[in-house]
Image 1 (cartoon, helix red, strand yellow):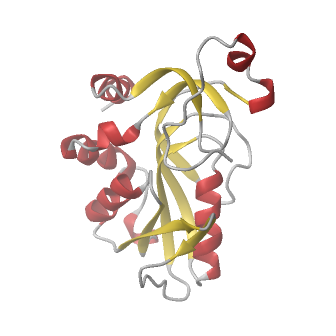
Image 2 (cartoon, helix red, strand yellow; image 1 turned 135 degrees about the vertical axis):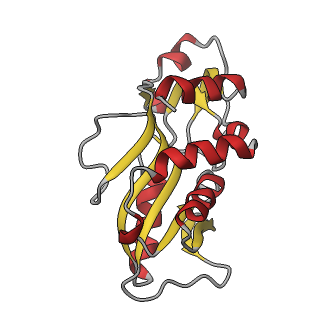
Amino acid sequence: MNEQDMLAMYEKAGALLNGHFILSSGRHSARYLQSALVLMDLNNATELARELVKKVDASTVDMVVSPAIGGLVIGQEVARQLNKPFLFTERKEGEMQLRRGFSIPEGSRLLVVEDVITTGGSVRECMVVVREHGGVPVKVLAVVDRAPGVEGRFDVPYATALTLDVETYAADACPLCVDGGVPAIKPGSRGAA
């Protein structure tokens, strides 16, 4: 499966949206990727995870972790294909935490999996939690990188299946807001930052 096939998968699912969106990071964009619409088809989840699994050596990973909520489906499918335990971090009162009885054995090597990366904030928060619980993040995988070429985003290697360079704007410098044509909507899983 190549990038065009993956993009077509998003388009067919109605998951590549155009308009005026507020991203989880608080930034604004004229395009939005609603991965949940793609991943609700388990065949799509299987295919996308297969592409991600090609980018990691399973022997270097003990567990797979994802930040909730976007990374849950793809993270679990990657873990299934790697035959590794899966856990996730989630926000409680605005703070990323490890909950639900999950634990990370000291020194465990964790693969962090996300659906879409723009700023990488959720992934970095997830990695902090992993380290606080004695784990060692070894690599980040994501289905889509919305902001390719960002240097120093993570302190571990990362790879994505699909690169889609989508311009984003600070809320106070958004030309879509200045134009006033289309109201901004927040389709994601978290309140704007």
